[in-house]
Amino acid sequence: MELQGRTAVITGGASGIGLATAYKFAALGANLVLGDIESGPLDTAVAQLRDTGAKVIGVVGDVAIEEDVLALRDAALDEYGAAHLVFNNAGVGAGPTIGTPKKVWDWVMGVNVDGVINGINAFMPLFLEQNEGHVVNTASLAGLGGVPGMGAYCASKFAVVGISESLFHELAMRESAVGVSALCPGFVKTRIHESTRNMPSAMKSYSESPDAQLMGDLGSQAVQAGIDPSIVADAVADAVLTNTFWILTHPRAAIGMTKNRVEWMKGVGGSIINLEEATKP
Ligand SMILES: NC(=O)c1ccc[n+]([C@@H]2O[C@H](COP(=O)([O-])OP(=O)(O)OC[C@H]3O[C@@H](n4cnc5c(N)ncnc54)[C@H](O)[C@@H]3O)[C@@H](O)[C@H]2O)c1
Image 1 (tube, rainbow, N blue to C red):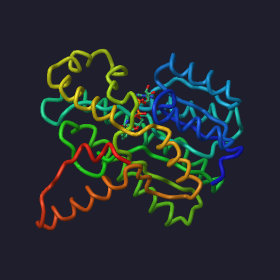
Image 2 (cartoon, protein in one colour; image 1 turned 180 degrees about the horizontal axis):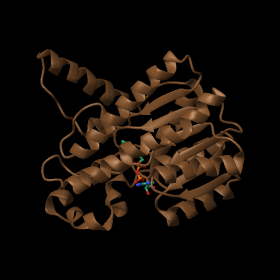
Image 3 (spheres, protein in one colour; image 1 turned 45 degrees about the vertical axis):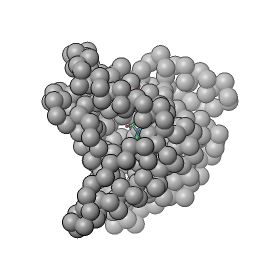
Image 4 (cartoon, rainbow, N blue to C red; image 1 turned 60 degrees about the horizontal axis):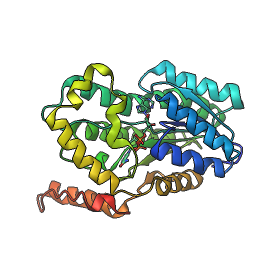
C-alpha cells in the first residue's frame, strides 16, 4: 500500500517507536492521527511534526477503552475523510510472573491486548468495505518466547502474535486486499522501561516494590543498549509498502530463539535466554 495521501492512525504516537514511525510516515506523504494517553508529550509531538510540514492531529485517549479508540477512528474520518492504516502500537511493560498482583497483569493485558483488539474492531469494518488498508500490531521478541521477569508482558505479546496470525488467515480466506503485520522488535531505545509513568495511581505502590525496581533496572539497561526507534520505523514502513507479515528488526535473535524453541519441543535442546543478543539488529 502506498502511503502518499493515505491516512495513518498510530496509537502510542507521542513517544518511542510510535513517534519515530509518525516521522517516517509523514516523510512518505501520509496524513497522521496520533493517539496517546499522555497529553503533554502528544501536544509536543504534534507541534514538532507540523513544523516539518506534516499533516497531523493528536487525540488523547486510552487504548484499553473501546470508546477512546472509536474516537480515534472518528477523528481520522472527520479530519481527512478516510483511514487506511492503523498501527496498534501503544504498550506498557511491568512485572515478573512471580509476585505481580493481578491488577497489574490486568493493566498490562488491557493496554497491550485490549488496545490491539479495540484497534482491529474500530478500523477493520472500514478497511474491509473499501478493500484497502493495513493493520500493524506491535508484539515483541517477548511474543516469540518466554523471558524471565516479564510474565505479564510475554502473555500480552504472545496474544498479539496469535491475534495477528489469525487475522492474516481470516483476510486470506476472504481474499481481501487488506494487509496485516506483526512487529516483533528486540530492545529499542525508548521510554518503555518507564511504563509505570502511565500506571493507574492505585497500583503505584507496586511499582516501588524491590522486585519491581530490580526488574525495572535490568529492563532499563537492556532498553538503553537497544536500537534506535528510527530503524523500527523504517522496517514498519517497508512492511506496509510490501505487505509483509513479520517485521523482525532483530532477525538473528527472533529466528534464533524460535529455532531453539523447536529444538526444546523436540527434546533435543534446552531453552536458552540471551538478552544481549536481543539488543542487536
Ligand atoms: N522499546 C522496546 O525495547 C520494545 C521492544 C519490543 C516491543 N516494544 C513495544 O513497542 C511499543 C511502543 O513502545 P515504546 O518502546 O515506543 O515505548 P514508549 O514508552 O516510548 O512509548 C509508548 C507510548 O504508548 C503510550 N501509552 C501507554 N499506555 C497507553 C494507553 N493506555 N493508551 C494510549 N497510549 C498509551 C505512552 O504514553 C507512550 O507514548 C509497545 O507496544 C512496546 O511493548 C518495545
